[in-house]
Length: 490
Image 1: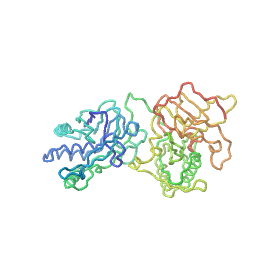
Image 2: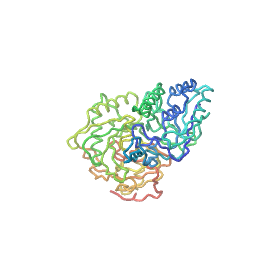
Image 3: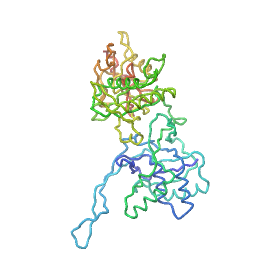
Image 4: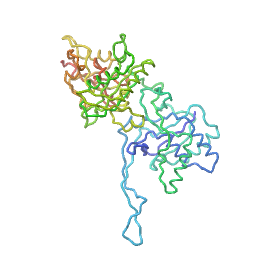
């Protein structure tokens, strides 16, 4: 195996996303590292130029870092500001002295938990003499990103143990990793070397040139856990299709109206019935969950609906194609009703997702966690009888929804606003399907802790197919072993 280890000599990495200077790029892309090698190469050496040409033609590497991506540790991203001199000259008021202007500049900074990144390729793509030359070139690189991020680079013979990694997703769009989270990484392509040289020549002539725009974007997913790591429990849903919602702002109390509207629109555009969509299949069929994604989790959250989503279980390929086509038709035509208004739907590309609101990031709902909290109340599977223990009914609803037995549960009639600000406090009539006159089943907000990490989305209860019981994963929040509030009744 060929591997290059990049070790930060300071506690921070300073380098921004090419299309968003305010967001840190972690881990540093392979294209950024390749550009650093181009900068230190001897371009009069045929051997080094040939090696660079070999490197730009390599497939996208496996990337090992901790955390795997900046969005997995967003609190570790900061911005640094400083006053710096500019190239422009200013009138100093002196006949003999000139002055330079200065201005405040800011740039993205990330504080990784471990200052090491490894880029690896399976097999042995370089000859021994090429590997030795690459090691010499790596030792010349003083920094990656800004000059304030000094590094050491070295070529490794083997991949380091216990290093979490991301792998490029396959070209056919199938997932190459668990969880389905997508991280976009810039990598070289055949011709990158000449493109970098052209930009350098333009800048030497005083013409504009942006080397950070060079490279192609590749989708990466989180690799499967290695032996010895904590096993992750997969939920009932294979994928999560997220749609942006553009139109009048609507409160999260309209969640069931939106999910019902989306469900009917998708079914109306399907050429044949799929049990996982309409819900009338054989016993045990996992049904799609139509979700309204609210703005929650921030101290200023108000719970308004930012987008819609469809949680899709494992389906035969022909059913997936049928469902995907129907969703695409709905996106093209939009949604609308008398009570809600008219809305346009938007599907995001990988690069567009970086600028999308947090609620529209699929990983926001799919992130693995042992602790989950509801943002909409979960409607229990049945009515409570006098002899029932509420906790037992809640646990049954969790199991019936396709998740393992929790080790701790807290239930409350009110949202856990201190844990997830903006969580919705619905009225009984807002927890039933529009146009249906069935009675109001009991519902509760839940804090759940599982023994092992569970991969989302997690949607609990009898109204999960309409988005109620949608849960948010918690990173540090724990659930007490002695639940409080589980004894209250409707």
